Length: 99
Image (cartoon, rainbow, N blue to C red):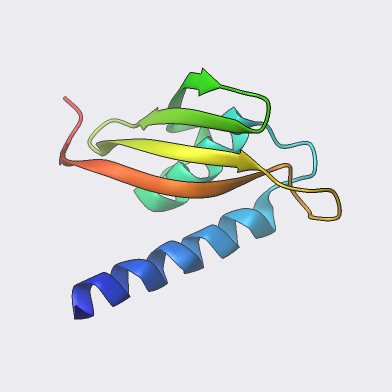
């Protein structure tokens, strides 16, 4: 239970930091790269993002960075009046780093 609470707190803090850095011109790729770069502790340019599904208001992104796990992010478009265009809906990662 403590681990789940810690993970939830970390995800919320990461999400808030990424949203603070995101711009109103964000895309699913730039949003996924921003979240993943903070999670991996690398520059956004080191994150490889592949959009596997893009619909009118949702997107699925796969992120990879050398030495880090492959992650899948579900993104959703946010309404007007928010400082970014896309927000994180869910995040899952493999247990082992990408080879």
